[in-house]
Image 1 (cartoon, helix red, strand yellow):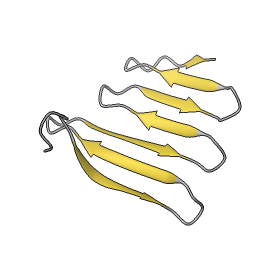
Image 2: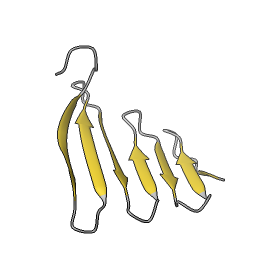
Image 3: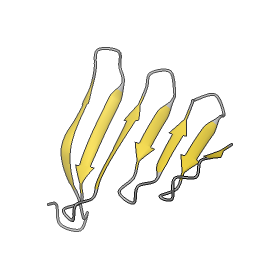
Length: 72
């Protein structure tokens, strides 16, 4: 694991549509990933279980670890 970062990259790349993804391993059973799409939308799945989605047009949804979704 890289010193000072607290995580290591397990995979990352860009597919043929130009969408980027990256996943991380925090070494304590926690993982996270995110992807960003060529249309401006992106999604994060965080190691604490929360998620965040932005549709690239001003709309977003955050779901905390408890699972209650909060749309904006």
